[in-house]
Length: 253
Image 1 (tube, rainbow, N blue to C red):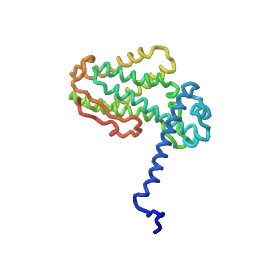
Image 2 (cartoon, helix red, strand yellow):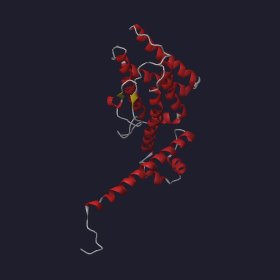
Image 3 (cartoon, one colour):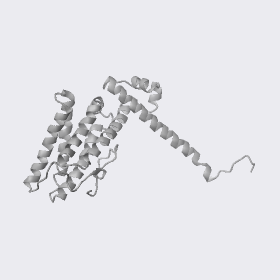
């Protein structure tokens, strides 16, 4: 074999895989940059923003943008994934805060309202987005499912810890999530009261339901004293699977 011809050793092949990995990482990073640009345009222009405006904001041409997104609907899907990350990054720490029941409920509701308050146009775009021909997903519905599943697991843990039937946990969770979301949509549309006021009203109603249920069963809970047990949910931002194992019950702390 000539000296200048290298043998085809097993160790020589991974270079192609390395290039592919670097290219995929680059594409992922570029998509994320374009999504952030789209969110800035959406905040300034509103739900009727165009692809060309996103390209200008990102400093690229439309053909470059179309290398990463097939159309505007595809871009909106990616924006929905980012919205889920933002929401869960705020909501899960609030749900898991080691505080008394009442401030914990208040903080969780405010985290949801705060996200919508900071990204109102993004919420309306996603709420009105309809997947086409089975392509894409209903981000708002999936986020409700994620939150309700996690909340159901946590409520079930608390009910069992107090020696109560955990059967109501799932319908309660879905009811609370729908109740809060519907009120948030009303508030975004009307803006007839402050965010602080509507959050306080919802906090009062949610606690009244919990307190009433507990008292009927001989359990008294002080809303302003931290519980000895602290049940939490473990959920990574961006997960869109609705299986109940996405909400992991952890030991009390």
